[in-house]
Length: 250
Length: 189
Image (cartoon, rainbow over all chains, first blue to last red; front, side, top):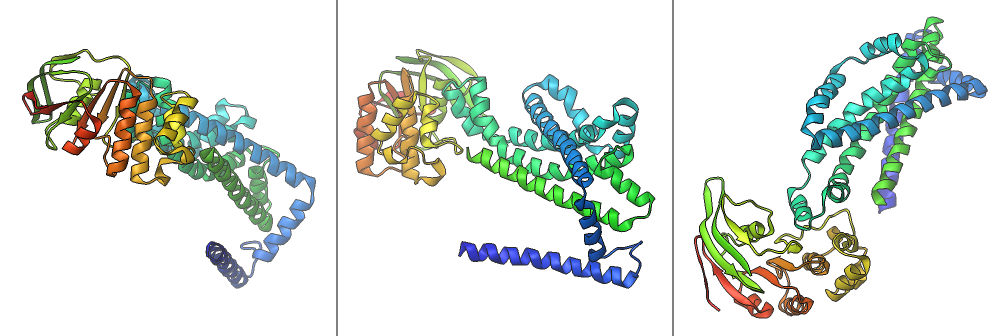
């Protein structure tokens, strides 16, 4: 029963992908100019050519490394700040407005400012972290504020103390929100990190390759790099989900 | 002996106690209809609520509190729940004693209501405490289990203060029954 449901879901997902590929193919055939809108075959050919050389994997690996570092730093900072602002009115007064400001400021503003202040190589990771941290902070803060009052009262009755209450009540309560926020933030980390690479023209990087593909009107390559980003983002999201699931089960 | 003098407490506009005076000896059992403040008084005694006026003295520092709700941490096994207030050996032994020896690693959400109640009781009983505060400890237990749990509580040898609903429960646990009213109390045992 479970296997048949899983198979059914898989077929439905594959069907949806096939449908949109067909739409893409049909539209690109209607346009008739691969320079403006390459179809799936041109994109696949460009991706195959790119991935045949070691430079592609170096580029992809470095972008992945930058974004993973940014994501981890942002997630750690967001979670720690959420704990700080939840329990310290002073920290809340200082950092809560900053988190809200960061959340609503356009990413391009940060990238341009970072270009003035920070070494180019560090910008994609920094920007990813800055986009990830407020998302994690918001999710974890709300979860901490909503911690079950009855469990907290139980902890007080048994004289748990501050650290034990934090470790055994607050943190496990906030873990589902932390996991959900992480999954939302992975996509943001990719979008912002690659956008930062584009604006920095940092090489080697996927962002710079996107930029140069656009400059030289190599649209199939632009699509191929975009497809690579989408696949990598999906894989990283699945990896993060698996790690979080394992952590929750431990 | 727990001594209560001039206790005043309100939930918003609703006055629960207005100048309550009461003496509670070892193994006291509070009986009263629902809504008359038994749980509130237990929480005031445990220091979980702060009275508006009055004083409560004679409460030991180390207490174990069995709430009306089970209040087990859902992300931990019942063994880990009990271990949070005790050492592993004592936690395990007490869970065995309440009949959950084969479910030590089960999470509360996978247990029946009666099993969760016994797990919560085991947690209270294995805690290093000088006073057990038991709010409806037999809630959801059938008569044979109630008798067995009452015997276990007595055998623990730690003074208790319990809020109970029925005369059967009071008879099973044993102790000095104290009827609680909103503004006073009197012995009826």
